[in-house]
Length: 531
Image (cartoon, rainbow, N blue to C red; front, side):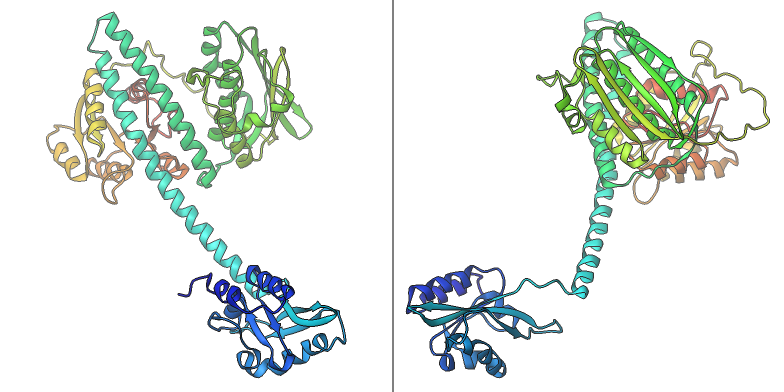
């Protein structure tokens, strides 16, 4: 391959009779578009062409000035006819020159200008015009760009799925080992140390989950599942969920709710509202919070009010950027990571929500979320559902047989330790072959299947569930653990009637699900924290 700067050497070395021609050669050399200089008597002119022109016409880069008639060949008469008026001093206006590129491209248009010295034309500088691109070329470029975007998006999605799983596995193992360790120690000092370790792990888990959420949303791998949602019920559940946190800080959390229905993804919309409530509690020291909903025409507006320190007007847009925080110069992780509102912004764009913020320094802030109202679904003719069993009345897990499947040895060992500490009998396996080996050693079918989603090879946790259920001929309750972020996995689990917990899970969440299954509670579609 000829070096890109080869033409520079030849043009610099070319004899320039005048300063005007020397300057023209430098312009020609530096031009990004095809360009050339004709110097000397027109019928025996010397040509200096830049690399772009040589490439356009399918010629080798020039090694110096060359006779123009020989270099242009059959098109020289047309070029000469175009520039001859400039050399003859018949005109000082630019002239048009056309050259036919190699291939099927349209002719390239050039504009030649005379270079004069002492009233005499000594050379002609010709530069290609910046023509509008050919439609065929544009179409080819668009197809190539779309193909590259699709390829990159697919590769990024695969990376995120793998990274999400692999990064969460060590946190999951540490969380299980820590919980098992806490059940084995009674020394207060050791328990205090374990509690601090747990707090550090929680901070790491929050950062990891937030970063993966941001990356997954940016990759476009999250697809909303819109459905009719009883807005007052969803918000009421959030009030009960966040009231203990607010009371712990001495804050009063109030709610003004009324019956209303919207069509949205309840999981993703719930994450929006959770992030806003978490943010309000975190940055409010005194007073309280109000979660209110009101009808505005064909829309419902949900307001999250707080009595915090307020947000300066010039910061109202920046707060939705990643890692942007107010009143946290030392980056204290206990005061958040600066990713909650960035996730809110992305989820709002995905769900078509309108998010507004108003604030007064020293008085507080209100975040408003607006979405279209929907017609409530018809009530099914059924009785009132029985309330879920309370934690106090939940059945113990002693004697429960759990088939635990995970290809990560640390996680599997941690699961076995924590389940056995709860009184469960554990049949542990890392792949499908080991599953059937451990099942042969059981006198009866397992009480529940607890499996990781991703297993070695092309086998998934859903394959394990299907095979084991077919083996025993009944719908054995199943819990799927996953570090992935794809919504399709959750839908697959719901279709099979599985509970679904997201890694890194807290052992308490797992125990609640197992107690509910042991007591004959809901077996289908349980969405764990972060799912």
